[in-house]
Image (cartoon, rainbow, N blue to C red; front, side, top):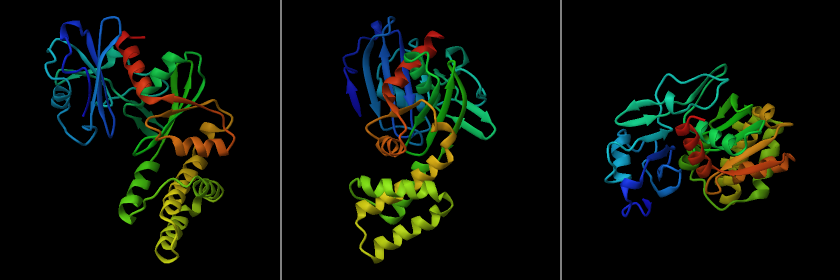
Length: 286
């Protein structure tokens, strides 16, 4: 758990709390009436770690008075607004367990769902109100490609690249340092032959066991094949588009390298900052 002045927080000066729940992390910011961050705290109680979100937030911010509102993203319940739409605001939040839970954003064709990423999109739009293009939001389980125009989420597509790579890594023991050359070669190969990726992954694993393939090269090739398949399918979202890549703790490095290899100009944005700015915009109702 990481705390920044949480234990010494004077709750009388706190107007409200912004909170974000991701697959790996629960973080919260205590804010003054003017929007100043008085404390930032986070823990590993992300999605799946606990079913009791209110209790997790109480552990994160002990002593929070019941009359201090908490606006949470990434913890919404159905129904969710459907695209095209603006990211949900506070008046759309669902009250549950003493929390205000912002809903996600749904899509009917193809059926898809944003579950917290829409708040980061809102933060990017708040900071870049004239942006017309695509946000790429890599995550530990899935990547979201979100088309934004005139402040609205127009469409989006999700890819389970992170989940598939994690499964291979855990089942096959893939490990090692980053090998960018092996990664980019695999990305290029998969983009040209996406239908063969399942077989190509089997080849990587066989080379790891039989031919002494370096573990870093094996891990990087596997990720490159999966990411190349993603880029091939997501091509309408990045080809000829303005692309913003939302990063956190350098997790978007493979996407940045892969897009750069396709000569796609990319703007990097800090995901944590976008989450806070999106929650501020939602709370203000703008």
